[in-house]
Length: 249
Image 1: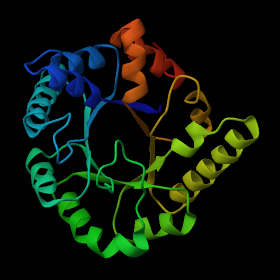
Image 2 (image 1 turned 120 degrees about the vertical axis):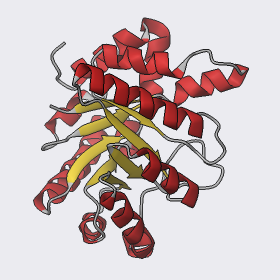
Image 3 (image 1 turned 90 degrees about the horizontal axis):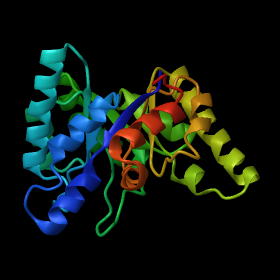
Image 4 (image 1 turned 135 degrees about the vertical axis):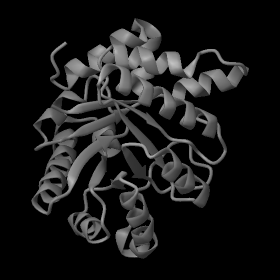
C-alpha cells in the first residue's frame, strides 16, 4: 500500500493570516487521521510563515498520544533544509522520518533537488546523526540516476521523488515521458536498496498513475489536498486521495 502523509502547512498558513488558533492545527491532524491518513507531514521554514516550532512539538506530542492510546503507527515526517536549529529540533522530537530538502532564499515552495556531488559531504554527517537517533532519512531527489546512486553512498534511507515536472506536464506525450523518468528513478533506487517516496503538486488527476511506480512507499500531499478540502471538506478530501492511491475506504 502507498501511504498518504498529509502536509498540514496550509492549515497553519490560514491560521497565521488572522492570528489566534483558528483553524486549529491539531483538529486538522485529527480529521486527517480519522479519514485514514497514514502520516502527517510538516515543513517548518525559517521564516515561520506557516508551521512554527511550537506546532512541531505539539503535533509530535499529539501523535504519540494517539499512537499509544490506539496502538497505531501514524508516521510523523518533518521536512526542511539542514540548518542547525531545524536539525536540533528534529533530533529532539525524533519523528519517524526527516525529509531533507534544499531551500532557495525567497522561494514560495520547494523546487530544487539535491546535488549530491556538491552537497553530499555536507549532508553525510547530518544524515548519520539523524539515523543514530532512530530517524529514517529521505532526500528530495530528481530523476538523475547518478545522483540517486550517490544518495545511497551518503547514507540516506529513501529518496522523495520531486514530481512537479510530471504534474506540470500538459500533453499525454509529455506526461508519459515524465512518468518514465520517475519509473526509471524508482527502479534505480529500489535496485540499490533505497526506499521511494514522492511528492510535489500531486492531485486527484495525476496521482492514480503513480500506483504504477514499483514499490512506491509514501506520497506527501498538502496544497492540492487542502484546496480540494475547501470545496468538499477535509475528511472527504483525504478519503478521495486515498482512493486515488488505490487504498480501500
